[in-house]
Length: 324
Image (tube, rainbow, N blue to C red; front, top):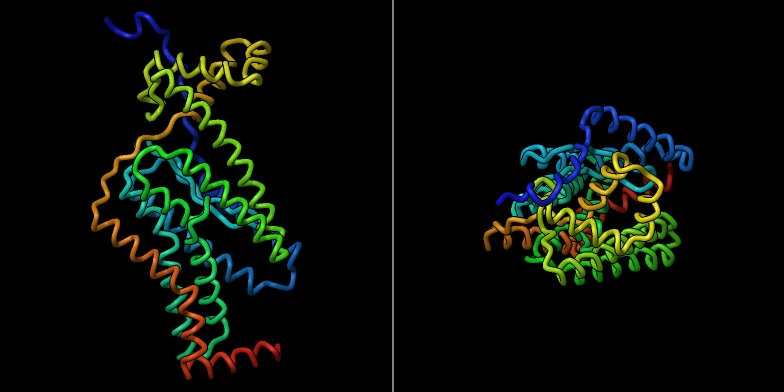
């Protein structure tokens, strides 16, 4: 008794096109540069430093994703916000996820330390600037706040589907960014926090849908490719029950136009399976790197100020800046 005798085939999910990935990256960098210069036209050296840090950071994620055969891998820059790399898989590996997440900030922290120590030898201001930028952006990125790499790393350590915990974690993260931005008078952080708030709202909707699916014993931890026709119909029914907007769209559109929209909506509800294959040794290594990196936020300024060589050098550095 085969399933297709009772349930119609689910609609095909349109595969995202990877063509133009490089051109999209270049275009986003150009827009990033133009936008930055519109607001900070005299900070060219700062722009070059931040571009170098972002490119190397995101290149780590990009190469790791490519190595682990992620699909549709793209690197994009967001004006005045930063950059990100996106890609997808039908099933994720915990170990691979840790490597992909860590491939951005951990090498960035190392670059920062190297540039700072080289700056002592060569007394080059640009090395100090670049080293501090590498450390600042990558260490902040390791804070356990969604959607920073630290938040993603935190999620990778969690085994199982703890949506309520992740929802609370994301909400707290958005509030920290908003309040921190207000305290520092940094409107970019505030705006970023509000964007995260919208994401939290979307997570809450999915949480409620998943709660209903669990109640009806409908599986949703799977890829769209492996989703059965029966389960597709069941999930679609739950979505139609909980979304007035989808019902309005259904009344206005013919089935051939509605099907791709419903396929995307159902796919958005699914949780990609995670293979929890990271050994205790791998977890200890990443936890050690994470803790050591975050400790630099406290330890490094103390070392710079108490070490005679560093203190003398930074006195020279500050004097240099004052004469610029």
